[in-house]
Length: 413
Image (cartoon, rainbow, N blue to C red; front, side):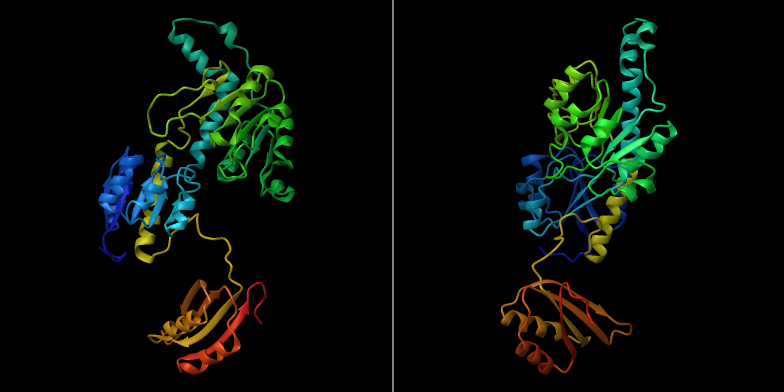
C-alpha cells in the first residue's frame, strides 16, 4: 500500500524513548508503535509486519536484514553516534539515516568529569568501604587534586568543546588534538594545539576521549599512545569502545599505573541489561559505568524533541535534517541549467531527452520564482550533453526559455 507523506506516517520505536517524544510524534500525525527491547530477528519481523516508514532506535542494532524486511524510508538514531546502524546497507536501499548530534553533549561531559573526580578522590572505593562498615581516612586522604593539572582532549566536537569550560572551572589548562583543529582554532577556544594524539598523551595529566567511531578512529588509541602517557596519568573514555585498544589499556594500567574511567567496553551487551564479562572492569584502578553518558533526563528530552523535529520535517517536506548518508560528491561533471516557464511536462521532456542520450542524472533541483510563472532547474549529469541534444531541447518546447551548461568546478560566468 502506498501512502503520501502528508498522511499518517508509521513510526516504529524499538528502544526506550521519552513519553514526550511519543506524544510529539502523534501530534505530528504519525501512527506510533513503541516496542522497546526489539532486536535482531524480532525487530525484522516487526518491521515486516507493521511496515513503518520510520524506525527510531537508540542502542539497538539495525542490520541489513532489518532494513530489507519492510518499507523503511528513514532510520533515526535517537542519539549522537550511528555505528549500530548498517549505514552502507541503508544507502544501497535509498533509506535515509539521521541522528541527533549535540543533544547529549553536556550530559556526556558531565559524566566524563564525574569519572575524573572519581579517579582523583577514589570516590567509588570510599563508598564501597563505608557500605562494608569500615572507616579508613588515612588511605583515602591521598589525592593529587585537579587544580593546575593538564587535561588532554582527543576530539573537539560538541562534547569535547563542552569539556573546556568545565576544565576552566577547575583551573585546568587544556591541550587538544582533533583532525579538524588548527592552531588558530585552538587559540579561539583557549586551548593549546597539539599536532597528534601522541603529543596530547605526552603533555597531559588526564586524557579524555571524545571522537566519533569512524574507520579513521577505530583503534586510534593503542599501545604507542599509552607508552607516551605519563606514569600514573588518568585516562577517560566516554566515546566508543572500539576507539581504544582495550588490551593495550589493560597493560598500561598494570605496568604504568594508569587509572582509567570508562563508560564504554568492548564486550558490553547490546541491550539495556544482560551478562557482562570484562577483565579490564575488574582492575582496581579502573572505574566503569554502564554506557550511561547520554542518560540524563535533560539529554533524553532534548533528543526526543530533535527526533520529533526530524520525523515531522520528513513527513511534511520529504527532507531529512541531520542526514548522515548522502553522497558528499557524485560522478557529475556538469550542471544543465534550464530556465523555463512553470508548465506541466517541461522537465519531463528535458529528462526524456537526457535519457535518450544515455546520460545519467545525479542530482536535480527546480526553483520557482515568485508568482509561479517561471522556474530554473539545475540538473547534475554524469556526462556533458552534445551540442545537438542542447539544440533539440531549445527548439522542441517553447516553454524552455534558455538552456546552458556549467562544468562543475568552474565558476559560472
